[in-house]
Image (cartoon, rainbow, N blue to C red):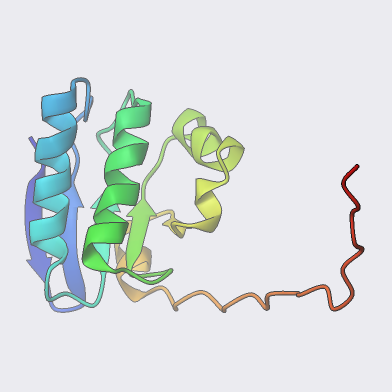
Length: 129
């Protein structure tokens, strides 16, 4: 299971090699992440040991973010191997969770700049027939 390491800058959760293989695993990981992140300004998910991940792990991260009411930058991933990093890029979750090379960088990384939302002022009316 995951190991929680408290730090002055936040909490670090070290993941094991195959997190969330089953639904029960995913719920346990979500619980660990939520407990570790409560009351912390930053939750770092250290993926140095992760060799295989499933959609359940991605879901556990998103559920944790929602349950904690986390803002972008509150949950940071670190030490992802290139194939796993590619999964986050393809799913565009690298835009939701900042990803750092090391745990130290993840704990001290600046919060991401908010991106302006562009609202189209003139909407074209679509007529139904």
